Length: 160
Image (cartoon, rainbow, N blue to C red; front, side):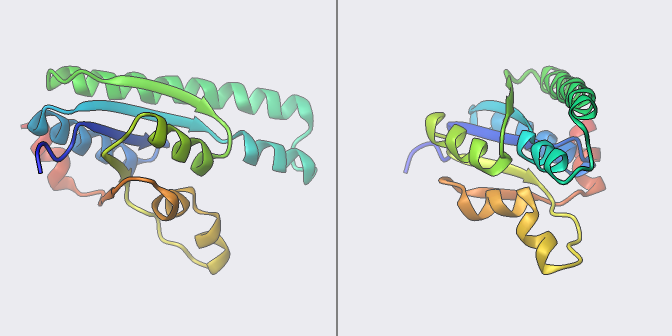
């Protein structure tokens, strides 16, 4: 069967659970001597829908998108620092678009062996379940998916 994982991709969305996922991904990459990529996708599709619905005007959308760009940069820098602490090489990637579509394409082009996601937040309705980007990525991923629960043990083990 060979090496189980050669290319691990971790999706970051800024949530605490995605930070747990990057820690777990770093540990996996180190254990399997795999390449590691952290990806943050700015959901421009959602921004466009907010403008169409009249929730944002164009200028607000632009300001919000700038804030999202800065958030993406901050989380990707944090992922790089965490990987550096464990002496793991990491590639950080910032993309834009409909998250599940962009991620599916990236996973194919990178020939990813594993997608690591943070835990799914509590979903209160069927509509939220259908709208959940994490849920959509799990359903459409061309590679195996590992969902990491946001667990203090992972944080403690990472820091050890």
